[in-house]
Amino acid sequence: MNANVQACKIEAIALSKLESPLLDQNGENKRYIKLMEELWHAKGCGGLGFSCQNLRDQAARLEKQQRITDDNFNQTLMSRSEGNSRQFE
Image (cartoon, rainbow, N blue to C red; front, side):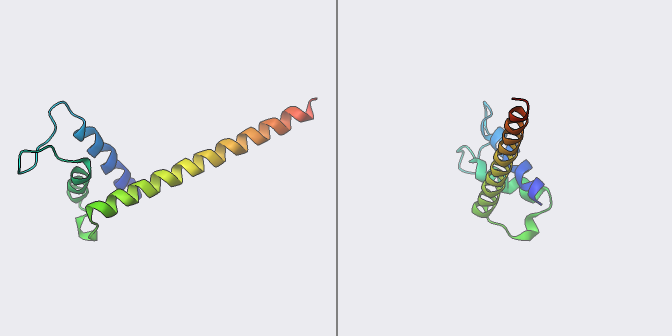
């Protein structure tokens, strides 16, 4: 499910940035959050009952978790490399 949320957001943002973006019923450009909901339903996940806002929040939460994980991994690597360089001094 998380992979679908992230994939929908990435695709929705790409679609919203097209030179000729998709239009809604009023002839206005569709916002990425609405596109994200449509993609979510197209993947067959609409039965889960998530709102547009909930999907956006879920995607933001996943992105934040990924950044934290990446930062922690990088810090671990840096501290290990510093420890190894101290051993050789």
